[in-house]
Amino acid sequence: MPASTIAPTAPGTSVVQPGWLRATHWLNALSVVLMIASGWRIYDAAPLFGLHFPKALTLGGWLGGALQWHFAAMWLLVANGILYLTLNLATGRFARRFFPLRAAAIRHDLAAALRGRLSHADLSHYNALQRAAYLCAIADLGLLVVSGLVLWKSVQFPLLREAMGGYDGARLVHFFTMAVLVCFSAIHIVMVALVPQTLRTMISTRLGGRR
Amino acid sequence: MKKTKASHVNSVDGAAAVREAARLLAPGAGMSTRRAFLRRSLTLGGLALLGGCSITDDNGVEVALAKISRLNDRVQALLFDPTRLAPTYPDSMITRPFPFNAYYGESEIRQVDGGTWRLELSGRLADRRHWTLAQLRALPQIEQTTRHICVEGWSAIGRWGGVAFAHFLQRVGADLNARYVGFKCADDYYTSIDMATALHPQTILALTYDRHVLPPEYGYPLKLRMPTKLGYKNPKHIQAIFITNTYPGGYWEDQGYNWFGGS
Image (cartoon, each protein chain N blue to C red):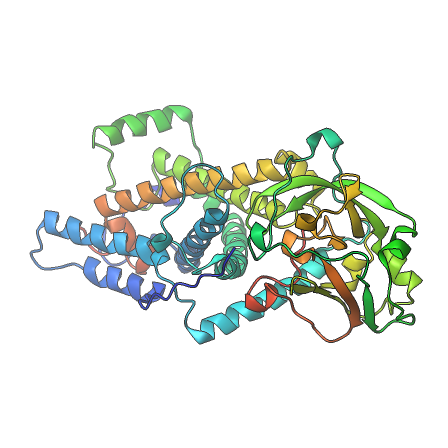
């Protein structure tokens, strides 16, 4: 029986997200918060555009401290990201949860979501909008890490550097992939607040009864 | 650029925030939907605010971060390819004016008398004679237009000329198997680098900037120029060079900047 057709009929019995998925999700959330908060402090040392980030939202206290946080949290982000992708692919969850993904389905679910009619009755599978959004977040994080690698080691990785349009190009890619991730996170948090059962699936083993 | 440290006292840990969220989201008896939504939003907002607190004042955290920074030194030494060259640029791409940068303002730029200046050498090397500016200028000279990348993120392209540092180190009989090369400067700056980078073909003891004698703002009379390292690793107004196996640290490195600082 395909996983997508399993409905959480009996309260307290169905495991929606496996333990490794929940663990890597929260470790990723922690590392992303650390990376963005310290990254904003680093950005403020030499802003690309007119804007800068309020110091109260940044981590590290000063440039040196922010750099220490950034270059420590990167190991958690990358190691956890590799673990997440490996387990997703090895268990077949990636193919099961994210595919098939069709443009028509995304359009349909987007229209339904904008009318407030997108059903979340069955949390054991992602709707097309979720699939598209989570895949974008994964790809965006990958690009964020690669552009960061170019900024850190622009001389040692010439091919990646040129693919990013040089050192300055990598700065822009790093900034805008950060912006995309922040937008994703904001929408993600709002959606979780609107459909709080999804948060429970990401915390507890069992999906409790819904009212 | 001055070091400023914030002293926030609040510290929130992620696990506790998640537990709090879990507690609030546990099935509550008779909680109205709107109230529940508000509480959930507040809790999630709280999670998002985690970035606002500085936990750096906690000594244990500082020690752990410093240890990871030293681990990153070793990772960078492994990633460093001694034959990989930094990109060079046509002169038309030189940043004009090239930005001045130091731990002090432009009004405090040191004026060194090139006539009485001598380069002192010490540590693990055979020939400790001092060098005059004229003697350094008499050595074979190389020139290159490369990108200077600042730890702050900005970068600028400039043209430096001088003596290949590898040639100089061989000339003075330096122990090329030693771990560190240290620098002491007339502006009280100090730093140190790994021997592999010291011997990199693009590492030069710079005597000129853009075909002219190095001006005071760029480090007259002598600067070390490495396109494979961040700006703060490139000392200006060098007075003394020493070869050692004992970690010498550096002005910014001792305050928390990563020691290897490589690109």
